[in-house]
Length: 268
Image (cartoon, rainbow, N blue to C red; front, side, top):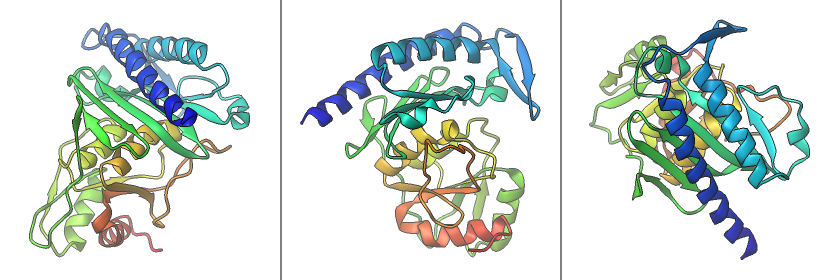
């Protein structure tokens, strides 16, 4: 009972602080924030740093015994000694944020035993809050969401790198509908959970902070996020880099995994 109560308290904590972080991020949205380039030609804005600092200060003040892993904080790996760890991307989809696109989000998860137990995607430009708690389902603005199983006759809606989408057209026995560019990987996975996308593909470049919250949201909505070998993602390990990924409804995982392997030219 105590563990369950703590889980609910963590859930409320994340929702409260994610909402406040969204207000902070919106101060810079479509207002030409200062931008720097990190290693690997990846941009970071002053909004990323402001949100990261706010969340780190307030989340760790509330839970000082939790670990901390964030895209914009140097990782000293002290998190590996903690039972629970905050896994944070202050702005997932920074390129889109900088470019004025609305599909970016603040991603926060709590990970225990290498799996997320609470997760939230705060999408202030879209006015969406997507939340999940282990065993309690997933919601969008307080309303339950669920992934859609793919029938044999329907069009498969796919999102991911253009090359993967194009390749999936060649290998699927069904009609495949490609999607427009969506800058946030976390949000692309959440679209599967919301039943708006059937298959999300991702290259082997994602990190824990891109995935943990969206992973739980997908699972609680009846979907799966796995690596190309069909294994669930393991978080808060020493190496936070992840391989190529597939997200889809649980019922269609085997067939979509096979399609993904062909699209990515990979084999089990």
